[in-house]
Every structure is written in structure tokens, then in C-alpha cells.
Length: 296
Image (cartoon, rainbow, N blue to C red):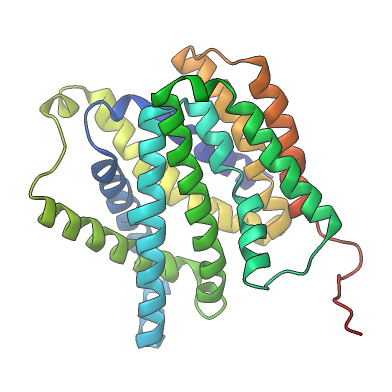
């Protein structure tokens, strides 16, 4: 339970902690710094526990898949998250990003990885209904609307990453998969910087020790340590129970936003949060009996 709580706190703090930083650097730069620090920590950890030796078992197809994972997750999804944080409200962004199980289910249905389930379809409908209720105000503000759209794009792309990631971790340890995918994602951003010909980082970023601490917090604790605690939680209490972190994250992120950013939370947010959380719960909840598809 301790590992679950640690993961929940770290996962829930990213929107609030990085909100101020977005005034001093761009979304791609924020993502690059965060995953460079986090990847370095995971690489060091793998060297100490011996996991790094498993790289010798990777083939060309493995590297190709992990390169794709790095592009989807780091270059695209996580950068969309930073754009969402820059323009949107942290609590709203946290809710949309945490709706990942909803989009994972619908993509899995399209790919025929899931069978049709009345319970899960209901969960999908409730999830989208909850998000729509939360976004009522955003449609009157172009900047908030942009933030919400970036968050939705990030959530859908992260759902696609989640599905592809299952294939990679079925053959190799999650630690190795993440180290390699992090590296490829960082290379993609580096190539992007080269073609753009500039890096969006202001000198004021380094004027405050607090901002530097925030950068290392996001890299070490949110990106690296929380990943390790999440894997440990999965091992201790199971994958489904650990996935409940996505249900509690919006609520905890909201508390952080109120305390640290003095963000005003509207009534429709709480209504949408409850409905969306219920939808995600129905999708994540395992059936007592396996679902089967009957063919006549």
C-alpha cells in the first residue's frame, strides 16, 4: 500500500509542479529535461541491479518497437501533456489524462483485443460524459479549450502507447523497455531541435533555485522513482488494483492545485470527476467470470 500511495502522490503532482515552469521553457524542452534526468536514474538503477545485462537479448524488432514507443510516449504524448499544462487548468488536465483506461478500452475494441462488454461500454459512456461536464466552461475560453484539446490528444496517444507497451513488456522487463524507449524518445526530440534550429529555454529558468529543484523533482521522483514504485505496487497488490491510481490522481491533483496554485474548482468539475471515475472503474474492474464471444 505504501508503494501505491507514493506513486499516487508523485503522479498527481506533475501538473501542479510543472505549471510555473512552462513560463520559462517550451513543452518539448520540458519533456526532454524530465526524461533525460529520469532515464539517467533508471539507467543507473539498472546498472546496480544487473538488469542492464539483459540488453544483449534485444533484437532488431525489439529495438524497432521500443523506438516506436519512445516516439509515441515521449516525443508526442508527454509533450502534448506539457502543452495541456501550459494552456489549461492543472486539475482539468489531470482528469483528462487519467481517463487513459477509457481510451485504452475503445482502441482495444477497434483492434479486436477486447470483446464487447455492456459493463465496459457503460463505463466508456460515463467516462466521456464526465469529461464533457468538466469541459463546459472551457468552451468559452480559447486558451482553456486549447489546453483541454492537447490533454485529450495526449490521453488518446498515451492509450495507444499503453497497448503497444504490453507487447514489449511481455518479452522484456519493463525497466529495460523504458530505458530504451526513453533513449529513442530523447533522440526524436533532439532531431526536432536540430531541424527547428533553436531551443525554447529562457535564462530566468536558472535564476531561481526553486525552479531547478522542480526540474529535478519531475525527473527523479515523478519520472524515475514513481515508475519503480508503480512496478513494485503491481507486483505486491496486482495490476488492476495498482491501476486505481488513475482514478484517485485527479482528486489528489485537484487538492494540490487548490493548495499550491489557489485554483478555483467549479461544481461541474466535481460532478464530472465522479462520473468519469465511475466510468474508469467499470472498465478497470475484472469480471468474476471470463467474457467469451459466442459464434453461431
